[in-house]
Amino acid sequence: MTDQKEKFMRIALRQARLAEQKGEIPIGAVVVKDGKVVSRAYNRRITDHDPTAHAEVLALKKAGKRLGVWNLTGCDLFVTLEPCVMCYGACLNARIGNIYFGAYDSKFGIENTAKSGVISFNHTLNIEGGILQEQCSAILTEFFSALRKQKSADK
Image (cartoon, rainbow, N blue to C red; front, side, top):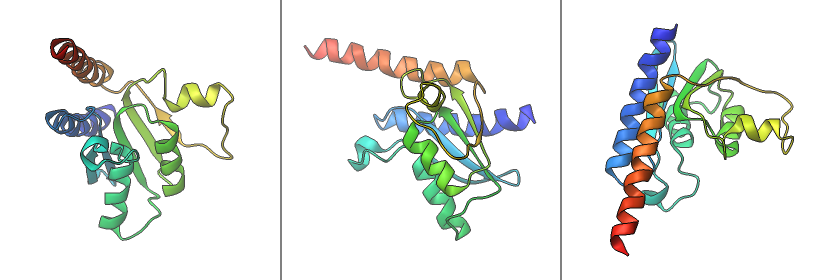
């Protein structure tokens, strides 16, 4: 199963690179059902002027349209960065089976938020992190490093 997880995370990484090419924070997501990609998406918050246009939410929307249902039972989500509370909530509402992510997000990721006791849910999803963690972290680190250099050069 690890090979399958890495396969789908690589597809999510390709989506993250597309986001980066468009000046978006490089996060990509893929929805999978029965071993097949149902949808893929990347962050579009800047492009769409939409604070909810996270890769996860967009991938869930596309999956629902493609499958003709809102209930994505039997589907799994692969995302390059640990989901935030909003995206985790969207996965709960969509009835996603499993969430697999690459890089951990110590500020906004769901695991730290839930552990802090700030929020609690009446049910939870299986969530597994660290899949291709180095590659998923590197693309974000490189993006923000380049962004900081650009801002310094603009001053």
